Length: 219
Image 1: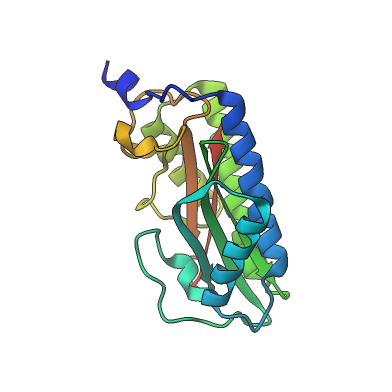
Image 2: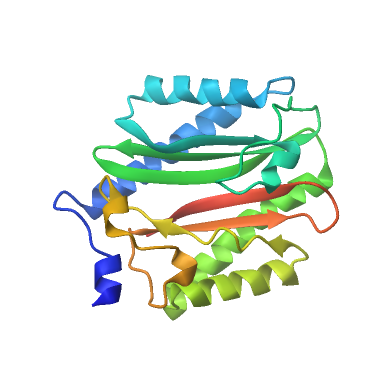
């Protein structure tokens, strides 16, 4: 009964609408990434994201826009950015958007690199690789949320990265999902149902002051 309560949805919930919100949010992430250029301040990128979302006709934002440059890519969601860094010629940044489309919550995030820093490119690629491996593990084994993050930690370490376990995924649904108080995916013992949970992966470089982030809907 506890697992069922944590995976409850509202009367408007439709899986196809969740997929639509997922697709629109990814479109917004990629549109913004194309507009982020060296010399831009982190706050300027965040303001440009508002422009992108308004151009696309969003319903509303359901969690604050997050754009992190450089060393701020090590920060977790609840931590404020350190200062207002300017994106360098060789640099790394990530975008994390939570947007409502058609009454359903989209949440997507990815890391991008400008310039030619091989370590930064490897870190960004690794976040997506670990996400894909964990998603495949969920799909093929039906592992519970806690087991998924245990697996993510193992895979990150095997690839030479540190997994930040201060973020461990969360619920989404028709807006607002927060009334269900489901907690983190990484603390959910049962197998997460499709279309309800966001898998978050945040990595840190083992020696250099930056990281990478990737998240998407398990569907």
